[in-house]
Amino acid sequence: MERFTTVVVGAGHAGLAASHFLTARSIDHVVLERGEVANSWRRERWDSLRLLTPNWLSRLPGFAYAGPDPDGYMTSGEVAGFIADFAAVSGAPVRGHSAVTSVRRSDDGYLVSAGGGDVSCRSVVLASGACNVPVVPALSGFIPPEVRQLTPFDYRGPASVEGDKRVLVVGASATGVQIAAELQRSGRQVTLAVGEHVRMPRLHHGKDVLWWMDASGVWDQSYQEVDDLDRARRLPSPQLVGTPSRDTLDLNTLTGLGVELVGRLATVRDGIALFSGGLRNVCSLADLKMKRLLAGFDQWGGVAEKTDIEPTRVPANARWKLDLGSGEISTIIWATGFRPDYSWLDVPVVDEKGRLRHEGGVVDSPGLYALGLPVLRRRRSTFISGIEDDARAVVGHLAAELGVDAPAAASQTG
Amino acid sequence: MTTIDNGVNVKALLDAREVLKGAPEAAQFTWRASSKWEKGVRSTTTIEKFFGLGQEQTHKNETTFSSDHPEVFAAEDQGITPIEYLLVGLAGCLTAGVASVAQNRGIQLRSVESTVEGNHDIRGILGADSDVRNGYNDIKVTFNIDADASKEEIEALVAQSQKRSAVYDALTNPTSVTVEVA
Picture 1: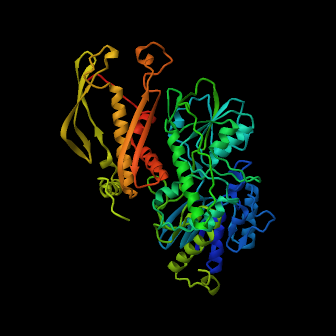
Picture 2: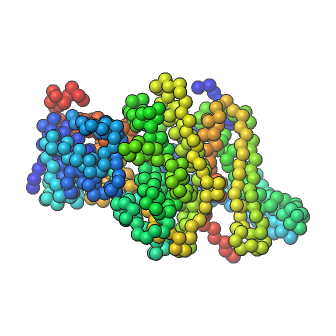
Picture 3: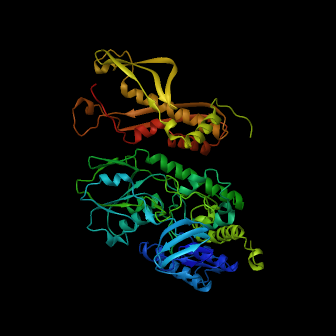
């Protein structure tokens, strides 16, 4: 059987960053990839999707965006190209089209079964992504069969939605608001079911809101300092979109486009979708949190000038039911989040809610590590630019456990 | 932080949250009420026992509530209308939430008052128009809060109180209700 010191599962930005630091420490390893480098960016994104983070924030270990538009946002294809370039520059030992089907403990480490054959190793870095499977609520089972149900993985663009009837988009985080806006602009009438969400303007005092996150140190907060870590890790993506015009995409934008807002989809009873009557409060919560966030930025930056953001306009009488069998709507799009897939992980480190048990990327099983998960070690971990510090720290732990001394070049950055 | 006291034992609540995270079965409560028809549209409901933390529990005192209907409904008005009890529940729950959240956030309250209005088209219950629902069309709660806090902090208290309110949830979201004859 083939043997490596370390196996990295997944050749996205996280797995390749791990590989970069493993190489720097001369730890022999292989990166097993189910498809090709940056696979999910090539196959699991809708056509118009761009990164939420501006180009200048696209930083990987020893590799950064060097193009002409630092304030722009990469398309999915450009992200895939960027990550593939990083893989080439760092000479990562990627084995493509080698999907991992099982990871289990062995006497001295782990046995990894993959498309290309079994591999044994002492340590494994799980970098298979945080968004492998779209989450669809159980109540989807009560939707009448004549209504078509799509997940964001099924959605490529407005052409993915047949006919010209009303579309119900469930979920108002980045995915939901982007798809709702795109469909409404294409001429469909969209109803958007809105639960708790995170509202943000694209620009604050002329700078990208994520510039403020980055510069003010919000993203540097460590997972040990976060008040409610569980909640921080589950927090949905903010209502942002990356467009060349750097527009804000909040609920007021959608109302302006003609999208109908309703409360959270609470249940489906006798073919009728029932929406929560709590729409006003989830909007108040989001408005208040946004104001606090921006006030914190102003305080940090010593900015006296006030920004005046209109409160979310909540419809006076949002409807609380929609007859799914009446033919009024043809399609439901579940923008209700994503989850990682660990069905191939035969090590008991996943809790009853499907989450990996780990401390800052050190998984609850010796020699097992994770990278590329939300708020893994700090708030920045959720974003591409967070991977460098995370991968350095996690590979540092991995190397120390192996008893491998850090080479001089790596120790000065560690 | 200066010591503030709204009379809420937040520490006990936070401790309970930690304990119950690992013991979901102990978190299962059943609230109970027993009702008896008196006369006309009047009934009496008593509440004394409930189940929680894995065992039967008893309130310090049994409480009796009279439900009746007003004279404009051609009734004797010896108690409040059942649908008004929903307003009692909502106000009680949101106010408790405001006090708890304020305690947790170190905000001293001086007074918390609210008015709760539920708009109700009674053609529904009379069967006069099948397009009109039986229950409230909408409910409006207005808080007047005097506290050592900014307007935005007070708005945040009220918003958080709604987010964690049992009665707010029960009124804004559907609940499965089974009614049987024993």
